[in-house]
Amino acid sequence: MFDIQSALPLFIPILAMFIPIIAILSHYIGKAHSERQRHETIRELARAGQPIPPELLADVQDSDWRRARRDQANPNRILVPAVINIGVGLGLMGMFSLMMPGAWLWSIGLLPLFIGIGLVLYWAVERKQPQQP
Image 1 (cartoon, rainbow, N blue to C red):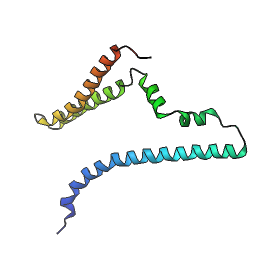
Image 2 (cartoon, one colour; image 1 turned 30 degrees about the horizontal axis):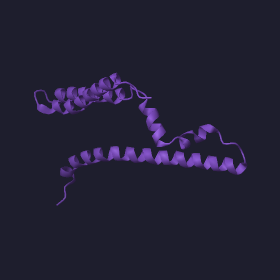
Image 3 (spheres, rainbow, N blue to C red; image 1 turned 90 degrees about the vertical axis):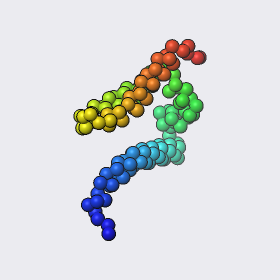
Image 4 (tube, helix red, strand yellow; image 1 turned 60 degrees about the horizontal axis):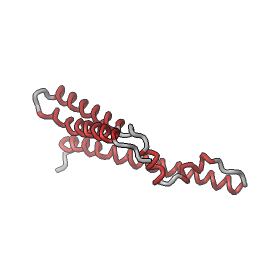
């Protein structure tokens, strides 16, 4: 017999797994909608014989290769995810150590903490490398 009270704790992790999936889907749906709107605007301007502003074509003309090279030129691009991972790791360690003092749960925060520290080390090594033209 199915008892809703015994199954209720299972709904929380299931819901937690759907949150990032919904966020990713909504991001790509929104991006597709904005691209559709941009192309519709370009088509309307072309039908009317109006000049197309260069701002509308900037992202369309920018190839993935050029965009990747432009993003790669910033040497500090790796610092933001590094700081976020360090903060999340320290936050998880603090939260779990306060929730259950003396338990091992605080060590869950070590994973994002060490990922962040690894990203900072990667940034430090990459920063010292000579820039290629």
